[in-house]
Length: 147
Image 1 (cartoon, rainbow, N blue to C red):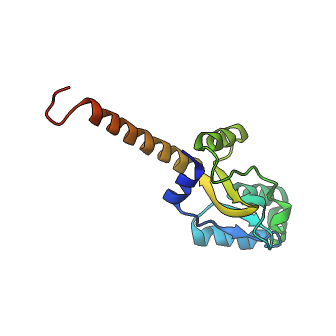
Image 2: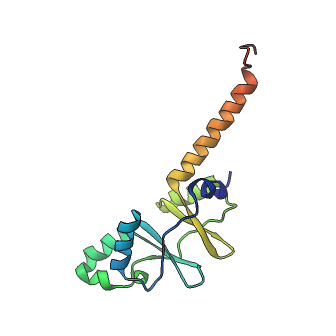
Image 3: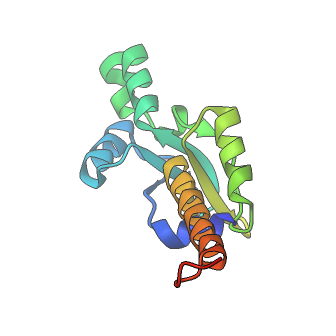
């Protein structure tokens, strides 16, 4: 099963921001969208970074109110790990685990297509395994109860 299956289930709606957006603007956007992560894209929709609620908290903790006027570019994680729609879900999960992250941008032909969340990927794998089990069970146990 690949990442595309997760995107089909979850959708491709993703919050994006520009590198020049201010930290306070992104914080407001997080509140409006009820999210804690945004993908930072250039004008051609190429992923150049990721900014999280944690990044904002760390910036404010380090620079107090001065952090709010800074551009997202100064606090984002630059050149984040990404995956492609055709990548295996297990591979994407392994990448997230190795890096200690819960979200992975999905890029196709250099452009942002969406992002895969660790939880959604795990749910998709679970549902697929449950379906496989149900199919296997239907082959073994016939409706009449005979084997």
